[in-house]
Image (tube, rainbow, N blue to C red):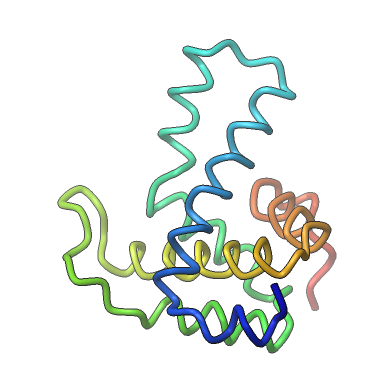
Length: 132
């Protein structure tokens, strides 16, 4: 998909795709680390929730290009037709939606290398370039 086409999609549509891609990245990372299925499930639940995604977004925010930051801002400001889940903070939920929209955008526009770079940084601060 062309970038312009993807930018015309609703942020919640991007986030819908991004949520699935994010979970796949998290689960793949655990698989490569040799986790058994039970451990993978527990870790996935810990990593694929609004709080964890909000922290991931905070780690990668300084690395975003202006175009990526715009997609993330649109995602953060999107208004779903439901409240954040009871056990999640509303601010974290909005940040998680920003991350998911960005992931969906990068995936749909074929920017897999950039997506993986940001994912690695979001998971391990040591993978992030120095940000001054």
